Image (tube, rainbow, N blue to C red; front, side):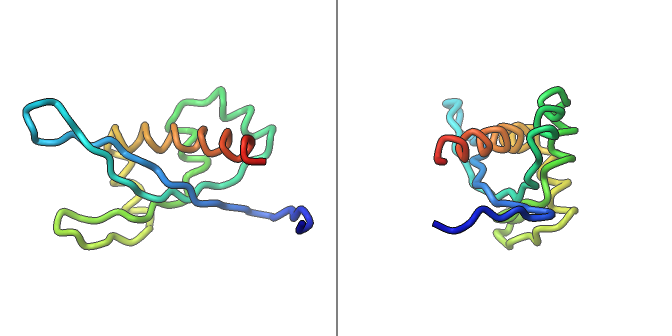
Amino acid sequence: MPAYVIKKNPIYTHPVDVPVHSEATDGTGTTQRLVATFRYKSRNEVEQLEKSKPLDVLDAVLVSVAGVVDENGAELPANDETKAAVLQDPLAFLALVRAFWQSLAEVAVKN
């Protein structure tokens, strides 16, 4: 088993399933996946984030989003502009917040 490594500015990626409304009249939707890069936070920082508003949480932990395409299917770069555009979508915003908290719980369960 490898030794535990303490990193200065660790980050990790996590898949995020975003619910998307369809144009169907039956009220059904679908999901689309993007990949978020989150910043690890210390236990003390996580305790503070638990008291924060969702936007403040994402401001603190979300580094970038990848796997995002435009209306023509062209992949967008994983930069601040793409991240800002994704955060304007309320369904994507909520999915990212949920995914961050779930990522912490999933790592705890896997270990």
